[in-house]
Length: 118
Image 1 (cartoon, rainbow, N blue to C red):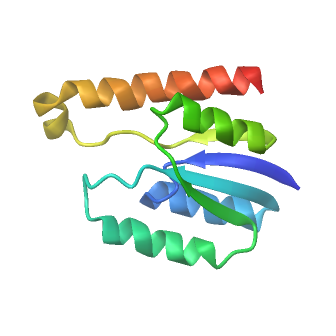
Image 2 (image 1 turned 180 degrees about the vertical axis):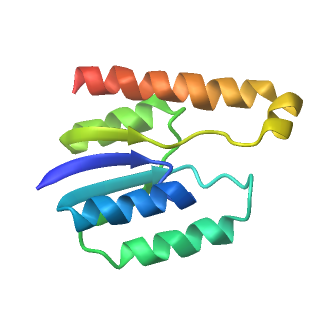
């Protein structure tokens, strides 16, 4: 079975992507930092429906944390990485632009670097 790393797995698009991947024979390791930009209960509910599936594993990890990601990459052999983790919301990006840089740029760079190494 092919392992896929799916970031942003607790988001709407991430959860639906996980369902499609599993339906098509993939094993999915979903990660999300579970931030409270919007109601965390929505994210938790989505994960509950995914946790029922035998080919899904959720791990709470922030893509900004290189060491946690490195541990994850060393534990699993990923055939693919789908990065759906991102900071959303235009208004908040004006108030706090640096959080967008760290998540959307540093986080993506971490994933690319570890994909190259592993």
